[in-house]
Length: 296
Image (cartoon, rainbow, N blue to C red; front, side, top):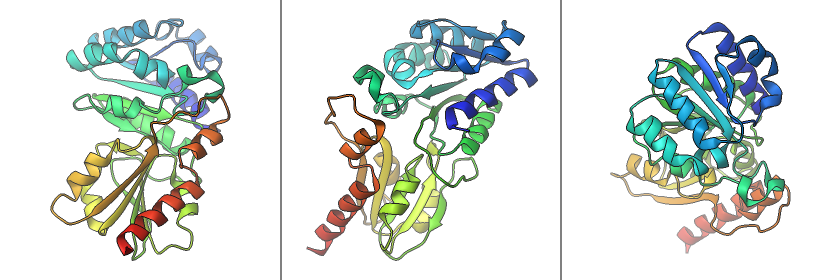
């Protein structure tokens, strides 16, 4: 089962078993919600292609004491309706679970309107928001259940790119391998590419699906002086968290992620990933240049 299908199955189960949970969506993923929508039309609401309304309905439900799960493509949920998120949820101090799919380049065939490499950076401007990037279906299920059980504002990023191995949900770094060289931090569904990139390199690799809050203590326990951050959205989005964690020790930080140059054709998701140097070959080339600069 893919992460998007897992999201739908998990949310349907939560609606079935918890009368306080409501699902609000804007056409996207409707093919997965037919049964639960017929069973609970009062708590599964399709607002149509009206993303600002989507967020406001979710915030309104939260004000009544419900726990809303609000869903559409990330480009529409975050970038198009950010003002509603900022005011409806943030300013009013209510919680909910916003679930975006399609980022960064899953829907490359839809053109730039459907691509969302800036969603995590934008959500990170909101105080107190929790941001998750599960890398597998199992992590998606666990993250969603934790987020719905909480009372804060959560953003969960569900995408097509996935990792092979799953790790326990929660805001901590998992040490995947240890080495004497650079420390590579993989955020979300880039772990497989990172592991392929550092094959033959004496590197430490750590992984987390929790973008915010970030496990600063966990990083401090393993990080050396050379740190490489790999994240599948705008490069440098989480650099501040790494820098804060290591503020009292000398270190160099290389931030890898989606760059500012667009691949101005539809293409396939893998083509966009490679164009931004986020495939294994691109990551390794960047790490090699980083280490060579120190040697020079």
